[in-house]
Length: 105
Image (cartoon, rainbow, N blue to C red; front, side, top):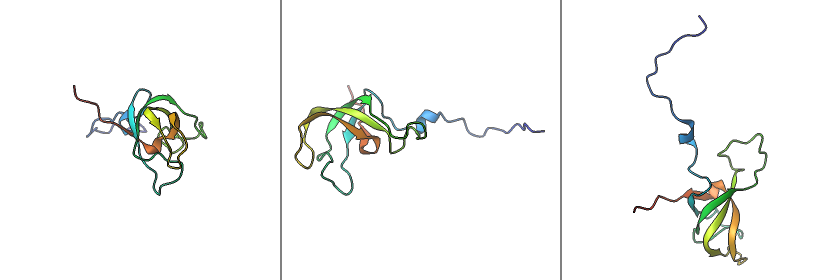
C-alpha cells in the first residue's frame, strides 16, 4: 500500500553529472569578475588545481556553491589588476573557474 512501484521511463542520473568538472589536477581558466575589480585576474590566466581551498560554512554548504575555493597553480606568474604580484598560486572561488577542454593528442 505504501510502497508503490512506479515505472521508470528514464534511466537514473548519476549525481556527479550535475557537479562542475573541477577537482585536483584539472586545468582551468580564471574568468574575470563582472564588474571588474582591483583584485581579479585580467586576461583569463590558465593553471592547474593543486588543492582544495578553505571553505566558509563547510558543514551547511553544498559542493558547488559560491563558498567553494580551489588552490590554482598558474602556468606562469600572474599579476592582479591592481598590479600586485606576481603570484605563482592563488586561492580562487569556484565561480571564477572554468575547466579547460582536454587537449587532443
